[in-house]
Length: 158
Length: 338
Image (tube, rainbow over all chains, first blue to last red):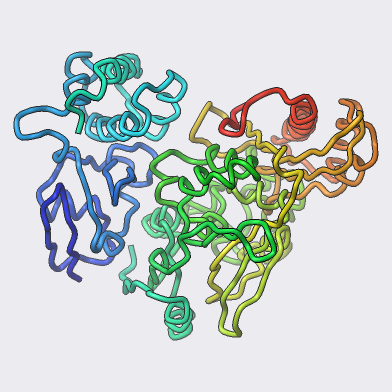
């Protein structure tokens, strides 16, 4: 089947999509956007987190057909050219990246959190990121990155 | 994954008619957070997948006779954030927020949440027998890993639990489920949608093949404004309930005028604690009375070898939840974590 959708502001068409493919597969394998990662494939780890029509979801559990006509924003769509999004900058500055596999999903999830709650309490951050697993860092540097991004405020945040 | 045909329904008649043409192989698809996973695991093998998320059932509105009418395609996050739900039925908002993760709540729909399948490990593992997945193949959980499974209402054929938090709140509130089937519309009460396993554990609900949930209606219920959901799980977030309690309490001058209690994580259905409610109405609103009421409900418990801990856990959770409602203490409506 054909799936037409908007990804990072650009209209995209994927042809010969098999019904059993996920939105994640379409993004990675058909549209050449490998930012969202394929890990657990069951909605547990959050490494495939993307915006779908304005809310963050696990792209691995979205059937390709359900993305027809949708507006998708992936981690590739957060930076403005070479200028990183403040959340990406905060992850770098806080050293919140180790192997990096969970990072794109976390960046999108944090981007969503701070867009809704610019100054979240620690408990709110932990709850908001409960669906994103990191097996390297122990989360402390990730939490520091969220605090840093929040402290820097909305300046330049897309 | 087995090959299948994907269609997107634009109205309920089209969806129901589409199902009727392939009754052996059709399934409705909501948010997909459970079904897509089960398809990948080989547990669900639809030949026709009918996407019902674009049907015009995406609104929360006042019901004709008071109360709230919630469209079946409303996303769990949107329902939890709805001002009327938060004000008049805080137990429902808290139950929704206690379930899954933010990403999954953004995807999951009300109708799909009600019809999600058990997370019993044997059900999800196609290399193991399971009476729910393959009728007559046996239930390894009875003698196997059943630490998190049922203590009430189970049978020798199935000891699975219903995983939904939302459904526990809806059961306490006495919601009704609006269903469109081949014979037209009908209303199924909660409790009453889900069924005990008996000797047909493959049937989770009383719905017939092709029945489509279109809405859930909450009755006007004054005491629901004082209600809450408490959930005990193995970690602070993003885990299914070991035991959960949805409760509403109307107490005045130290006496219980009315109450609603339902339990999650203990049975094949969201479990309405009618015996406890009966025991409480008109009696004193004391911790001792709450404990006696919980004991009255749990007298029917038949714990398995390794899940006896759920009986005292459920008892103390009932007592604590009612005491907090009486005293106005504990987590607010947005919480839900003990």
